Length: 316
Image (tube, rainbow, N blue to C red; front, side):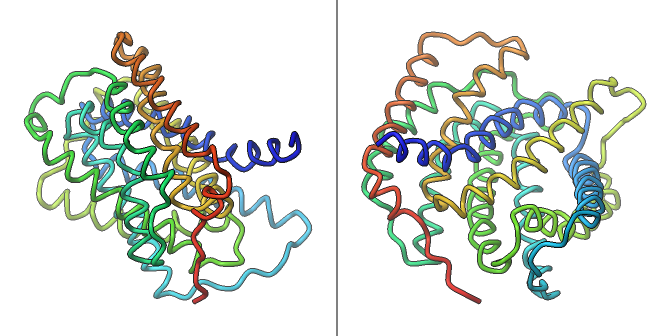
């Protein structure tokens, strides 16, 4: 029994680290969005991420060679980059223009979005524990959404648009999570994340050029505080580089629907992150924490159902 419990906790460790890292993204990106436009933020973040992965790849060449990994064709590379870049752009725009409360609340719907995408793509219906858990974790996560001011200036007044964009971003991310398992079968999770980032760079560059042509850039590096640069690097190396790599590992181990269920902890941990921006948890938020923990525990009570939630990824 003890060994089985240990294996279970080990399987969930990657997604728990991912959730911790991703909990910083919404308040951090919303904070940066006061001075930086989404196109510039994405170009900076993905260039930093690409440089990090190229450095990791250079160091890996000096180590003993591992098993040969099948090549990724250009069409699949373009498709993978489009999905990865599409999520990044949608998520960044939604977070910077939308009301942060609505955006964080919408994160609680990720398990349902992932289960629906998993059902459409793989024909695997959501398991009953996952569905039942939503009745606790969704309202619980909603109660824990950290309070915060909406964006001022040109981005104000777009909460509904931000909500719709974050839901669309969730669907794109779920499709990416399934596609990367199929198209990069046999690759390490490090290689999967590196290829995703590198193939997404042309799309981010194209969006940046289009935004510049349309006069949508509003980044002013001269007046931005130095902490902005530190924050951009931090949310790149943490959530984007390490977080995505561990997410791909989690989807491989426990499946997309179960991994997505853990994302309900993002707004819970976001309460703690919000304190850095001057918010203090109230009684309703603490009640939400209890509901999310209860829902998570109920969903994992029957390990057989958790195992059945693993997607069977078809071979290409």
